[in-house]
Image 1 (cartoon, one colour):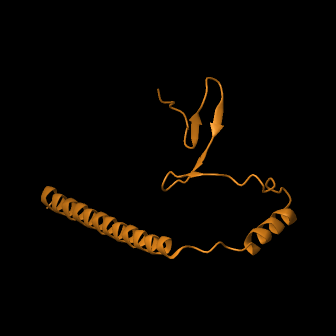
Image 2 (spheres, helix red, strand yellow):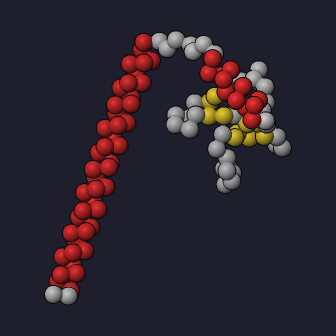
Length: 108
């Protein structure tokens, strides 16, 4: 039975307990939160220091095959978005044309 509430990212694992799992919004892959990181700072100075520390960390190298797959996926997404945008513009123009013809026919 499916819970009808806001259950994105939650899975029921027992009778009365809830466990939270974070999932990627795009692909649905479970994401493990970094438990070693401290809680979010409250003060502005602490927040800025946390952001600076996060930006100074070394970035893990990306394998070339993942990079190629990401480029192909990005190109495919851009093509689909362009196609959808063109289709919507065409639909909007057709609607304007239909309204203009109807208005000219109804009230000459």
